[in-house]
Length: 89
Image (cartoon, rainbow, N blue to C red; front, side):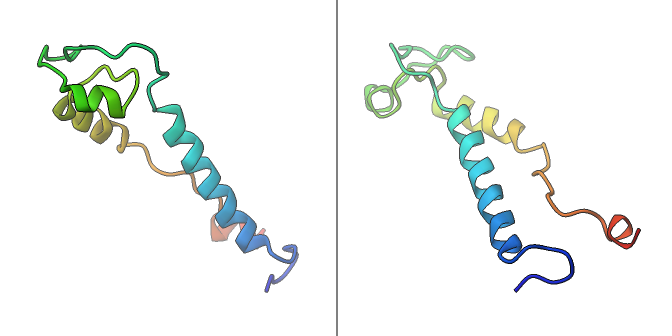
């Protein structure tokens, strides 16, 4: 149930848009494919064959990939809701 000037289903649309954005962002971080590296580009450790087969085009070992992913988490998620101050104006 939407309230005020919001359209019916506006809350669900906001949820759907947030999920779609998160999926698109995750897909953009996937390797493009192609030949995977045998050794990590950052630390030089060997990348196991099973990892290279599971993730085509992989360039980092598990430890370096985890560190890389943790660095990416520093950015805050996109907030689709306006502040209360802007809603009261």
